[in-house]
Image (cartoon, rainbow, N blue to C red; front, side, top):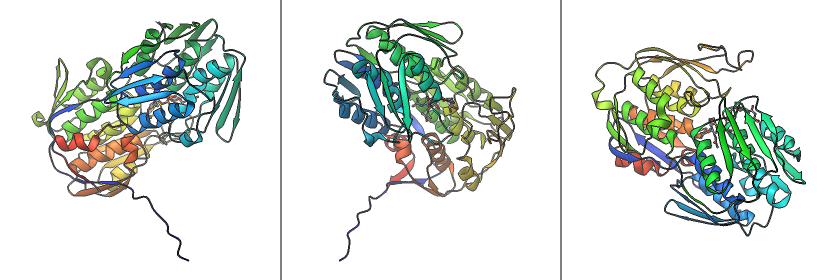
Length: 443
Ligand code: EPU
C-alpha cells in the first residue's frame, strides 16, 4: 500500500533586486518588549491591556503559551488583553519547546502563583551558546530550588524573597527574569551590573503601572521592593528600534528616500551617530526619521565599530549594518562583543560577492571577554562590492533581514527560504517593502 506523505510547503521570498525604496513605513511595537510584557501580565490579579503589540511570530508563540497555561488572551489590531485569573497549570507547554527564549521568563510568575514551574528547553536565534546560568543562579539566590534535565527546568519554592544579585555580564534576559520574580518577592531585590536596554525600561514602566515599586539606580542597578499583589494596567509598547534601524539601512542601501514613522531618536542615538559617520544623510522629524539615500553623492565611509550592551551600539543592529558596510569604500572593522558566534551569516554574503574576513582576535579599541577564546568574533569588510543573487536558507532573524536587504540591491534574483525566521520579528515585512517599491514575490 502506498503511504501518503504530506509535506508542508515552505514559503519562499523571491526578490528581484535593483529597485529603490521610497515612501513611508511605520515601525511596529518592539518584539523584545512585547513578548516580555505578555509574560508580565500573568503577575496581575485583573486584566492587563497592551497596545502597539506587533503581529509577529514570536508574539503568536507567546500568546499560545499563555493560553495553554490557562490565561485568556485576545489580540485585536495591535491590542492584547490578558486575563490571567484562570491560570491552571505551572507547566509550560512542550509545544513551545525550542521555539524561542521567552519561556525562561515564566519562572517568576509561575513560582508566585503555584510555588512551582516547569520550563521546556529554549530556542531562539543560533548566535552563540546562549546559556541561562545567570537566570538560574539568581532565582536560586531568591529562594527557588531548580533542577535541570535535558535542557528543561523544574523549579520549586516556598516563597521567593529579595536578594542582592550581581550579574557577571549585563544580560537582558537575566535582568528581566529577576525583575519579574522580584516585583512580588518578599523584601527588596538589588540587581547590580544589570542590563538597562530601553525594552527593559519599558517592562519596568508596565510593572510600575501594575503596582510594582521599581527604581532605576546609578551604575547599572535596579532596586525593586516586592509588593503583595499587582493589578490591571494599560500600556503602549515602545516602537521597535531594530525594525526602525533596519528600514533606515534599507533606504540608504537602495539610495531611496524613506520616512520611518515612529523611529525614536532616543532609542537610536548610538545607531544614528554611526550612520552619520558612514555618510548616510537623515533628518530627525517630529514623528519619525527620514533617511535620504538619494542624497548620497560621495562613496560611503568605512568605519571601525564595536557592538555593546545599551547604551552602546546594539548587537542586533550588527547584521544589517555589516551589509551597509559592504557598500562603503575601504576597510571597515566590526568587533562583536555581546555574542561569540554572530558572524556565521557572513558566509552567504561572501557568496553573493561581499569581501568579509572573520578573525578570532579582538579587533576593537579594547579586548572583550572573548579575548582568550577561539571565537571568530571580529569582521573585516572591504567594499564596495557589487552583489549577485543567490539561493539562501535563512539561519536566524537578524541575518534574515540582512540577506533580504542584500537581495534588494543584488544585480539578479535571490530566493530566500526559512522566511518564518524573519517573520518571527518583522510585522508584514513583505507588504511594507513592496509598498516602498521593492519587487518581491512570496511563493
Ligand atoms: N549570557 C550568559 N549567561 C546567561 C545569560 C546570558 O553567558 O545566563 C550571555 C549570552 O550568552 C550572551 C550575553 O550574555 O553572550 C548577552 O545575552 P542576553 O542574556 O543579554 O541576551 P538574551 O536576553 O538572550 C536578548 C534579545 C536578543 C538580543 C540580546 C542582547 C530577546 C528575546 N532577545 O537576548 O535579541 O540580541 O538580548 O541585546 O529579548 C533578536 O531580537 O534578534 C535577538 C537575538
